[in-house]
Image 1 (cartoon, rainbow, N blue to C red):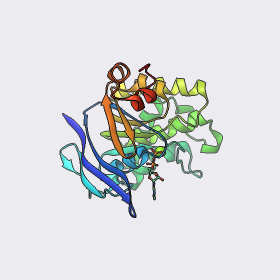
Image 2 (image 1 turned 180 degrees about the horizontal axis):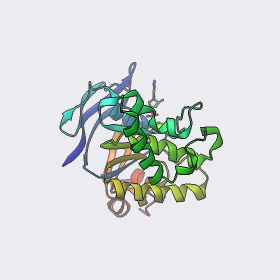
Image 3 (image 1 turned 180 degrees about the vertical axis):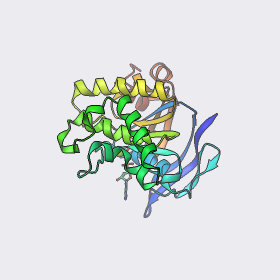
Image 4 (image 1 turned 90 degrees about the horizontal axis):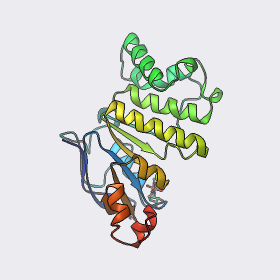
Length: 238
Ligand code: ADP
Ligand code: MG
């Protein structure tokens, strides 16, 4: 089953076209990684999928719905940002439950879902803390927890580990892999870290200047890059 598809999707800011016609199909449960140089449009694509940014042209489907006009909260997607974007004045419990509260999910159901996400992410002992009382890795776990509680069909991650030190990044990478295995959800993940891309992805999408340059499994891209640009990005010897 197709989880999500983009057909000839474009985005312009004023007269500048930054996404220039992207076609992409993502299967249910697939882990797709976007890579490409800074400014090539990775974040813009994620923001259009999440609904934080309008689509200038083309069609975006999630499940069997066209969602071009559907507001973010009703798309069944959740986004995790590099900057965590936690509410500084709310403790961990309320940060994770905030979206559910906005959607008027009853208190006991909210507590149940937050408790479950906290267990999954080993945050149970930190529920009463404020973001500033947490380490970077713990904050990123809370941001992931906030995405999980909404039970989205699709997770969108925008360079979620870039602010963490190398050791923690390796640890969180395997946590994200096991989360994907456990939840079975579709995940779209932006990174500029080749190792992250190669280890996490079922499928890698190489973007360049607002267009898809090549799509393939990590192995396909490594062994048969279409051109030097892809080879250099993936780190293969071509
Ligand atoms: P990436 O995430 O791959 O680094 P972005 O999606 O952030 O790239 O940006 C793609 C291009 O779109 C860049 O040239 C950037 O300057 C431009 N851009 C992004 N957001 C806006 C905006 N709100 N207004 C104007 N230009 C933007
Ligand atoms: Mg970006």
